[in-house]
Image (tube, rainbow, N blue to C red; front, side, top):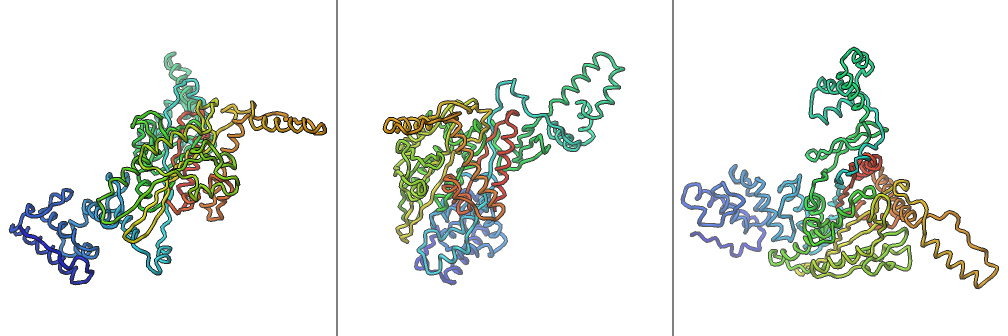
Length: 575
C-alpha cells in the first residue's frame, strides 16, 4: 500500500507545489502501466472506468490546486485524453461544489454537456471569496448578459368536433403548399408532393374536372372527395416537431410559417418533464447567486395556471412548476450541508402578490394592498416587506395554496376558472458565507400571467359591476346629505370581467412594448406597468429568464396562438 502525504504543501501556491504533484501523478501512472501497482491500491473514480490509472490520477488531483489540475493535461497524450473526457468535467464540477460551494444538477440538462456546464460555473468560482479592492470594477467587466430561453407547450386538442374545423380558410402559394405536403406526409421529393397535390384536387383543378367528366360514377365520387380535401386547408397548427424544437403553422395572412424554440413540449409531455426542461436550471442558478424569472404567456384557457400550479391534490405527477421548484430548492439546501468546505447560512422566504390594474395585492395577507401608495407598491414588494420566512417544504405549500385561494378567478365562456389578474410568486434566498462574511440575495420570480382574450369569445360585454355599484352607493349618500347633488347616471355598464380583461391586456401590452424596446436597443418603458416593474430584472438581462408560451391546438384560436408565438420569438431575440 502506497500512502501519499501532502504535508506542508497543502496551503502553498508555489511552482514547487505544482511540480511536486505533477511528478507524483506521472510516477504513479508509470507504475500502473508497468504493472507494479494496481488500481486496488488506491481510490478509483467510478465515472472514469475503462482506464487503468485514471483512478490514481484523480486521487492525486484531489489534493492539487486549480493550476496543477489544469497543467496535468500536458504530462502526456494519455493524461490529456483522460482529463478531457465528459466524465472528467463531471469530476471537476464536483470539486467546484466541494471547494467553492457551487451547485450543479445531478442530471444533465437537455442540450448541455458536463464540459459546457463546467465552463459556465468556473467563472463563478470566486462567488464566496472576500471582496478585495477593485473587485467591483472587474466584476462589471466580466458582466454576463443572459439570453431569454423560450419554450412552447401545447394544450390537448379540444374534444368538440363541431369546432375542430372552424379556422379561417387559407390559400397558400404553390411552393408553400408543396412544403406543407412534404411535412405532413413525410416525403422529400417534390415530384411525390405534386402527386399528392393532384390527388387532393388542388393542382390544375379545372383540367382534372374536365377529365373526370368522361370517367365512371365511382371516379366522379373520388373527384368530389378531392375537391373537399382541397377545401380543408385552414389556418392553424400543422406540425408540432418536438425533436427539432419547431412548430409549423398556416397563417391566413402570411401563409406557411415556422417558429423555432429552445424546446417544444407537446400535449403528451408530463408535468415533471416540463419542469426539468424549463425551470430546474433556474433553481440551480439562484443557489449560485443569480436571480431568475420564469413566466407563462398565452391565450386564456391555454393551460398557464395548470403549468405553474398543477392541481391541489397531493399527487407528485400533477404538481406544477412552483411546487416542484420550491421542493427542489429546499432539498438542495438540505443536501448541501456537510458536503462543502464552506460554512454557509441560508434562509428562504416567499411572497405571493397579484397585480390588478395599478394595485399590487398581497395574497398572503387576505388580498390587502402592499402599500398605501400606488407609486411605491412594487418597491415594497422588492424590498421584502411582503416576504414570509419558511423553514421547510410544508410551510411553502401551505402559503402557496393559501394565496392561490385568494386569487381573482371567475367563469367565462372560454374557461370555467379563468385567472382575472397577473400573479407573481417570489422565492427569496439569503445566503451568508461565515468564512468570508459575504452575503448574497437571489430571487426566483414565477409569474402566472393573465391570458390575453377577445371579449367576443369570452362574452364579457355587459353585466354587474361592483365598481359601479360602489360609486352609486357613494352618490346616494351624497344625495341624502345634500338635495342639490345631481343624480348619478351610469349609462351602459360594463361587467367586472370586462374591467379585469382590460387590466390584463394593458399589462401584456406593456410587456410586449418592453420586449420590442429591448430588441431595438431603445429606452425600455418598465415604468408603464406594475407587472414590468416587477419583472424588470429578468427581462433586462440581469438574471436568467425562461418564457413558456402556452398554446391551444384548436384551429378556432389560430390567430391568438400565432400572436403568442410571435411574442415568444421576440423574447428569444432579445440580446
